[in-house]
Image 1: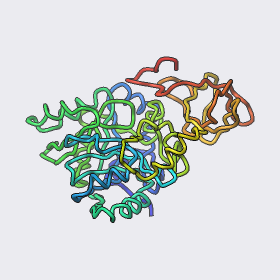
Image 2: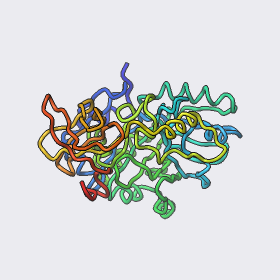
Image 3: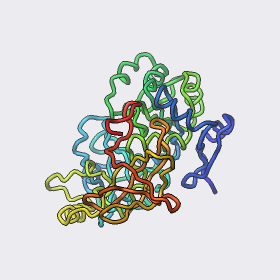
Length: 366
């Protein structure tokens, strides 16, 4: 049975083209993926991300538990509402999932994990939590809407109760707070996102999700599907679990070394494997590629370098750059002239530092 979010009928009424995404019936676009992409880069667009899994953790040893569970350090979270991006690793240092953790207090944290990995994530978290007597509570009664773009915050703040607007306006990046929305509905507003634009991800009780979606439409926010979400996050240099990393790929190999906190005295799961890999020298690296010729870079294509073969991970046409871009995993070392095998033709590509796009504009050297 394909799962449906509470907004499923709303998407269909808007004429969305629906696809199966990790077992969920989700909108890929509402007519034009390109227009939706540009709406987020230039104004404000929104995505139904209610398929994401919200998990609340409770117990006196919750901080201690998360110090063990995550490669990044929750000790960085000192103020209520602050958030942290981290990978959750297996003992081999492979990525079980990437997630965001929110801090309420030392005995209460919230995780938001990927939809496609829900079952294995919950099983892993519950197993690890037992030793710390931490209660793991999934929150399926919540929906989630991501509102992204240069005008996204202003449009959302206009829907917040007037007395609470200044507080939400002051939220820093990777911080969240509760506030009443339209008709007093309770919102958990997080200044996070997956597009490279500013904006909010809003957790809302399911019974208010349709009304919130409509209020956002009325405020001039454009509904967007998963197609635009994918091209936006690729331009912004953000990894997609299952495509750019998985349980056989370490954060070093996924260009996520910045999410590893090797703080003294903290033995997180996978730490020994990561330290050994670093000491031996990481054999594979993740890089950005741009194809200046005509053609499309797609997942699974062979990448040819002076050090041997690699492969395209995420690849797509970039609506902002109007050319094909991709992440690739290639052997470490000087790659020389890089080529990609596209249907038997070897096309030259440029190695670039990503993100490809920042604040709606091409980054330097792209």
